[in-house]
Image 1: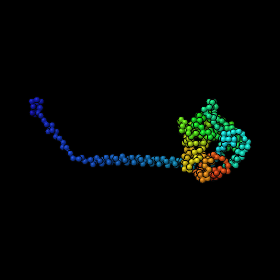
Image 2: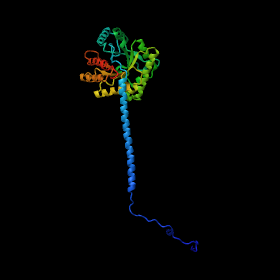
Image 3: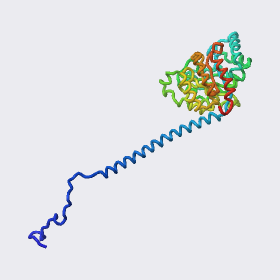
Image 4: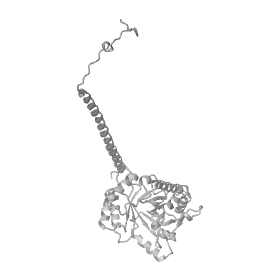
Length: 364
């Protein structure tokens, strides 16, 4: 080795000891890398497509299975005979009134021709007091004036096994909060059960119809929580009837648009669920509502509601009654006058005959 005079080491060139690699300044060839990236993207897309197809297949299969189960339930459910319910008001006034023997006699005579057709006569019998002025120790259940005499007259004319007492608010349509008080009142449900026994009716028919505006303006607005509370109230009425040895008496409910979600209402132990949502809608919506309700409720407890004064067109009536016949709908509830001018009545008579003859087996 050679040494300098300062460090005593020979000066060496590191470039000589470690030769530099040659630098390629040409454009690199990425074809292999691009192929790899393309393959990876295709691989990921294939899996995405696979999972999308799988999810669609599962949804379709689930829907088909649900339809199959619904159809199986529809065919195998025990089929009750056709049931026709109609609502009537007191001859003394919608909410009762002064006693009038002539009016009562004409009322009873007017119903007599339809005794064989009608299976259940729901008489407007009880109203409810305004909760805001109701003492805390009172139930709020009010017998409409002289309606007990109407019930007695109907019973004497042979309607005893078909009389139901309607409990409702009448045409006043109070706030939804009015009904929420009664949803939570044990005094009210016990009073209803006791009244069913006291006035010797076959059952109770509840008709709670809040004002449309209050369902939006009140807090909270109408929602499924109201349907849930309604169900609990109806179940308490049934339990109260059982406690007083009157479990043979029925409980039914008239379902309006605002508080009666059929999926929730089906959870109740009530004997009849009557749709008022089918009154005056067009045919497509009429069908949609019935299909929806039947899937939720089933045939045994369901009634399709029809309205004489809202739908008195002959074609309208025949189309709907044909649908109810061919689909073996076993319950119809009518609001309207009972006379020769009511075009629903002859069609309802045909419906009952058709259901009895064609919808009695488990295959229908």
